[in-house]
Image (cartoon, rainbow, N blue to C red):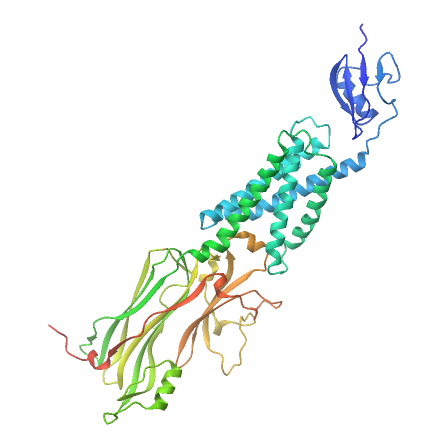
Length: 480
């Protein structure tokens, strides 16, 4: 039987020794035990005498020279692979929300880039075992370098966005740990010369940098530029119809139409809406010949017109209520119309009947409102879970709609505390109105006084013009 010749080369810089059998490569070994495993795979006896110079030739170092530090190497593999995998999961968790649900194309592109970057890091995590192992794959080092560069850049981006508000979020510990880890990982691959053997290392670095820059640019475009540049124009108007007297009762039916149209390019939510129909009472003085300065000053401060012969004394609400369901979605170019019929008694002391309406609109390209916003919360049914505190003597009744509001770019959601939008329609004996607030919750789970600027989420209130008709026209005979 022909004896096979085994040659074990000197350890390389990592402590790995190449093995050949009869001149053909047979793998590499970290230790004597690893060498025996290689020999068994090649069909040689696992218990062969390694000191038999006729069978085994040791080159550059004897059989006792195994400089591999297995513990350190395995710890490096574990830390690198775990860090890359955690970073991959984080990027996928952030990106998948925008990739599937962002309203704008740039927002979805940002999400896709984050998901792809996470996928690249997952592949890099698996490649760590080969590169810090026996390097059987040609480009495992290149994949690891790309994964670490992505981690350095994305963690830097996350911290930069977080630093704008510097708020505690459950993601913050992950950001901080991964940021420290990414710096260590970059130093580790630098020491290991992981880019050696890559055909075009500069191109790889440029590709990784371009991916991060593209994601950053799309983030800036979708979160900053596009919401500022896109046009928002919500038209609201209230108009009277033709009044009709009741044939039997002493009252008149007055139709009122309320119209809301999104004439801009941005869809959005209706956070709240309300209409009012007033009957105005006035005193008439036919003898006056000039305007009174004090009356003019008072009217100016109150935002009212000054009339020569008429002095308004009261305005009583005849009808009020919501126009559009809270949380309704109004797409660009679409409209909503509602009609009401107000019953006004004959012989009332009104001189004018007036109407207008107000709508709170939130841009859809800035954020999303959770579906539970449509569920009303009635102040008179609240017990311990109150959202607002006020003195019992001055606390209005209200209907509250409350839900979490999420920014349309998920990168912002994970770097800031949750925000909530609350919109209330309140009522008192002589007046009513609507209001809104965007705020985090305080330590007691109630709305914080630290209100968010409404422009950040594109929330605004639109009011129609005030329409008036003479009360006398309600009882006037109909035209032909």
